[in-house]
Length: 309
Image (tube, rainbow, N blue to C red; front, top):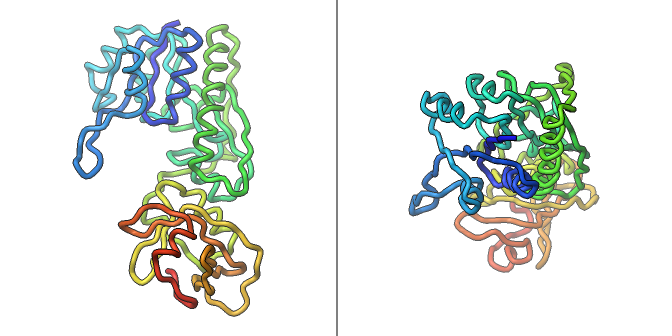
């Protein structure tokens, strides 16, 4: 079976890797163009390109997926199947080319959390379970018929980054199972229940400011759901403070305003919320490196009664 694999970030690499390990014929890999990154703005290759290049796979990096030359090249490759993991929205003229169809791996239990940031939203909403889904592509994003799903528990302190890595590995196994079912003609896709659909749109930095007036549970979920990227933030004395990890204490707030810092110790930084004290565990002051609360308190002056906001 001739497969074209389409993906860009690190999340997609395990899925491509497992197909190669199981001797599938990946005739080409389609990924995003190289982009300038960092202070020097040097061109950086996406993780999928780096992996594919290391395995001598044919690479395509189209700027536009509707480019006639790109579409013609996909047709010339004559794929039986297109496998999509963390890539752009494919136009119909591309996803209809393979005779066995095109399917996508999505990091949620569809129809919940359709969109660009399903992992972040699942955690910020306080879900205790999520998963991965493979589905055949249709024109409306994340609405295609479901092939396979796998459920994954979310730990109460688990961050989006940690869940991302777990789902990438679980997803790879589901991609392999899906390819095998399609190859054998045993895939039996089912329609999604539109009544259960929820959105998971892209999260921008301006959406990540902490609102200390919320309760500790909401804030804990908010922080871990945005960690490590795009990252929750607050301000102290006019300086931005990124927050990567928190821990609920269960200690009730009595007479402090939300966002107020209690008497800091050498190792712990406690902040008042609407109901409980929240312990800030990992932080990054603008212009500085990410560090533990203990490291942060050794080098930065915080006083009782200081206000975050």
